[in-house]
Image 1: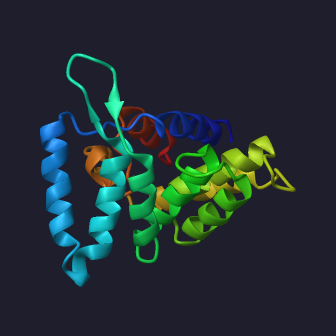
Image 2: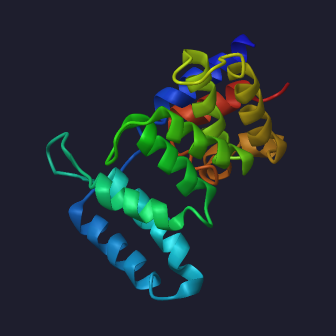
Image 3: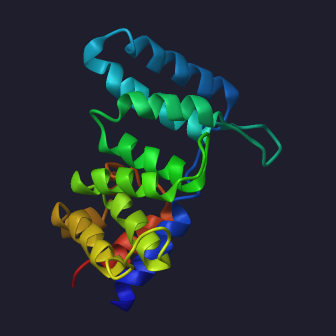
Length: 191
């Protein structure tokens, strides 16, 4: 179990440190591309998901540590994408949990994380584990260990030893693009 909680710790830490688009120009280009896809019903939902991420992570101002992001626009796009994408459902929970663009509401966050976890989203499972472990607004924190184990199991079910050679490619499908998370995945891989 110690191994699983190490994974949980690394994952929760890294969830807050994804890389954003590097320049305003690149950001605007990617926003324009996604907005074009909004016009086609077959790609509109995934375009909303992409716009949600773009506005959430924003872009960096040159020579500073300042990031320009727009949480209100991000929330709006995730809300429109949630019907088709468990990642958007997870993101809605994230917004409610941290109070980004909405009033902080742990109970609403748990509802969104539960819905995303039901769709086998391992990040939602980790957030549920954190919430249950802390006992935040939930009646019982005994479920924390269950959610951690399930998140790891889901990630490893569709992986192979070959995925360890290129873990960043495999983990990108879960929205995981952080070195710390990649190391946690490799560390927690079943022997």
